[in-house]
Image 1 (tube, rainbow, N blue to C red):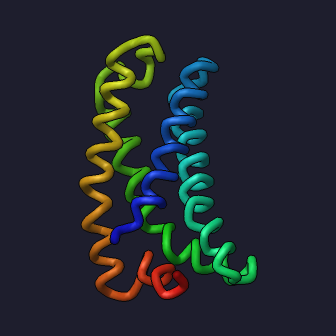
Image 2 (cartoon, one colour; image 1 turned 60 degrees about the vertical axis):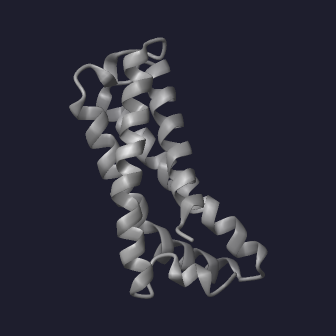
Length: 136
């Protein structure tokens, strides 16, 4: 099974960051930075919490989480933010528009399609979420 919980956490953070930044009227750059920060926070925490529940000490759990998720979240964030930035008007469309939500859905779908093969490749080489699979 691929690290869908990590990708889900990343998506939750991305959506929250874009929604909060747009709702507050932040500049595009600030909104992207907020979305990336929240994507990493949620992506890591969606892996870290189950690893901690398995009885691993915090320091070791953090190391496993960073090893498992960093490449995946980075790829996801590069792709979904690039799509949002490339779609004309998506970042300034506002929360009440179909353009904002359609662009966000498209960006997450494209990022997912790109990130899953990256995760497959990492797992096949004993990296990424293969590290976490040994714990569960």
